[in-house]
Amino acid sequence: MMENIFWTIALAAAIVVPLIVASRWTVFTVSEGFYGLLYYNGKSWHRISPGKHRFWKSGYTVQLVDMRKTILTVAGQEVLSAENVGLKVSAVLTYQIIECETAMHTVQDYVASLYNATQLALRSVIAGQSIEALLDKRLDIGKELLALVKLEAEKLGIEVHAVEVKDVMFPSELKKAFSEVLRAQKEGQAALERARCETAALRNLANAARLMEGNPALMNLRLMQSIGAAGTTGNTLVMGMLGGFVPMKNGNGKAESDHKKSSEEN
Image (cartoon, rainbow, N blue to C red; front, side, top):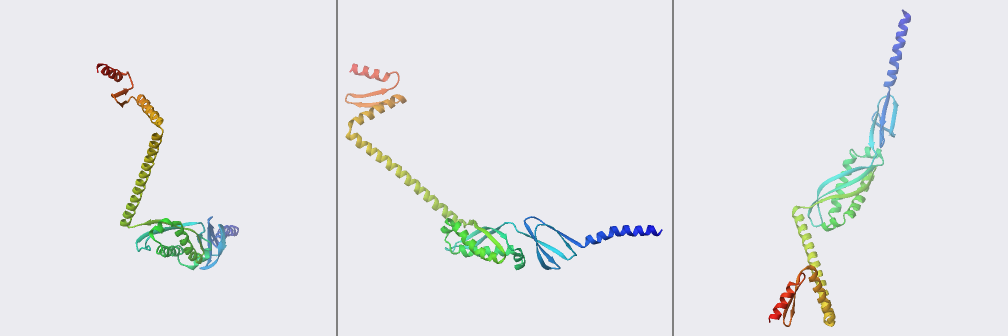
């Protein structure tokens, strides 16, 4: 009887003791591309790298921080240009956390802080730009924004790789004015091109007339070319002569025979 009790206690101990020991271990898994900030009873302990981690005793917690490049879109906001015209400008920036402890412990929400810094930079840069400069120099404006946002981001342990102006939305009246200006410019360019073509054609005709005036043989050559072209295409060529006119037509020669008949009768 005592032997049975002993074996029962030993079996229970073999089952319960590992469970108690296992319950004292805290296990965390950090995925690739993240770092884990380890806290013990609410106090920052150290940073842990991707992988599976075990810690003895309870009271450990881990906060995951995404260390990959992230894109943040700053929605369109009302900004006054140098001409005091209200525009809606949106931007997009690419950032990456470099110091996760600074990003998580300096401010309550590092994303919101970065968003606000970009908004303020947009207002500062756009306010000093004319509308034409804003449209023509968007890349340069992006560089100015990057310089301003980068300073604020470094305080948060964040590196900003790029800032670009995404969209510029104009009031409807300004859009209409821009479309009218563009249409007028295109119409003026078309009229100028037509005038250039007409001038070139007239210049060529004047040159040809001077050549024919100085060389009558060219006139005869041109005449023969016209007769040959009329015969090839089947068109009727009427040539004026002293005794009347002679119609010339390609085909069965009916026009020529009729002319001969009328000449004999006369």
